[in-house]
Amino acid sequence: MSTTTPPAVGGLTSQELLAGYRTMRVIREFEERLHREFATGEIPGFVHLYAGEEAIAAGVISHLNDDDYVASTHRGHGHALAKGCDVDGMMAEIYGRYDGICHGKGGSMHIADLSKGMLGANGIVGAGPPLVCGVGLTARIRKTAQVGVSFTGDGGSNQGMFLESLNLAAVWNLPVVFVVENNGYAEATSNEFHSSGLDVAKRADGFGIPGVVVDGHDFFAVHEAAGEAIGRARRGDGPTLLECKTNRYYGHFEGDQQTYRAPGEVEELRATRDCLDGFRAAVTEGGLIAAAELDAIDAEALAQIESSVARAKAAAVPDLSEVLTDVYVDY
Image 1 (cartoon, rainbow, N blue to C red):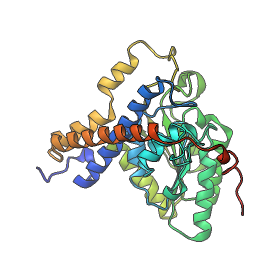
Image 2 (cartoon, rainbow, N blue to C red):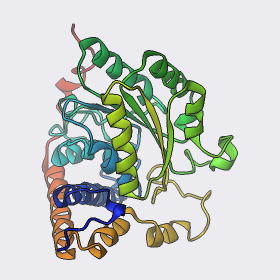
Image 3 (cartoon, rainbow, N blue to C red):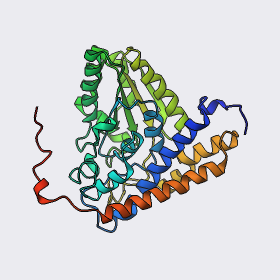
């Protein structure tokens, strides 16, 4: 194996490369399996799949420590998995089982695990940025080195609270990073019709903070830009707006007929813009990782997801006595 690292991989060690690939592959297998399972009618509620966007969650969150925090979106499985949330617990949660990380009462759109720094998926569009402003303010007051990262879609970036959060973070010089996962359609409306201007990241100029655009299909581009932004925040140099141009492979939600997309669009994206394929090509052609090592991760991830589904289906549903627990906080 060559010891020369091609510029495209940003100097990552083999262990870091394998960890990044493993995160992306687990997310992909998790989402692909959910797509099939949801069609059986056994999963309650809405499900919004992250397949196609894995490089963003993996590239950004790989820079975070255990005590850093992430605020997610309704499309939050990838963020939760990248932050270290338990695969079995997540699958059980989506199936509405008591063994789930929220005891089956949150479901897909409200997965949260504060012990992992996962503030939660969120059914409210654009709700993450204000939450990480709270993380940033807490870090400032307590004088810790913690960082908060929010993920927002292109549709959520048009919410007033998104812009208010940029302003607040800039005024208070908070250690936060605002990540926009721009998959081009918000819910079902092209960027051409819902956003003025070429890049969401340009909005950072109005608040005097850096705004960076990267290819969200490229793990290495995301990893490099996120590393700079998170490092900046951790040094006390303030917030950054990071826009990742990406695509989702499934509809806005499971059941979405995607009539707003061109015929063959998704098939072409899978063939030419798959973040896992791009990663594999970069590391194997560069002589950094053997294909067999990636194949082993593929097999492990598939087996892990298979096991998590079996466990979830066998688990108990919450008892009726649980209906009023976790509703209020005592303090």
